[in-house]
Length: 196
Picture (spheres, rainbow, N blue to C red):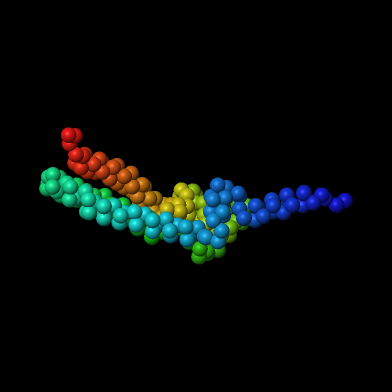
């Protein structure tokens, strides 16, 4: 018996979805961008963060520092030192989160490290036994110890090796955002003209 044409189209569509992946949110978003790879997108996001930090340095020195210096030299010096420290630590944390090994499981396998497929602690994709709490990253195509997630903003997995720097990156981003907001508020208050 021959199947109707609509059923054949549905099966082809399902096969394509299974071939591409699970059809998760990330697959739909990143897959919709055409030929761009996740590595390219991650590199662009890292460049965006660095450019944004450079922009805050420029705005701070061009506008905020001058205004604060005219009002109070000590305040300007302290504010600028804190600004440089927060954003410098943010960039350092970003650099370490990107370049640090997240805890990839070694690929050189001895006879003792090989396991049987279907066994607990065995990765079917790497064909190696993996340590406890290690997970396979489908983007890096490797197993990562204590893997949290694959982050496009650092273009790397977040795992045992770089988790500290990822958390510091988040912390300095939040502190830097509040600090820039507070300095912007002070700058705006100093620039208000008295009502006639």
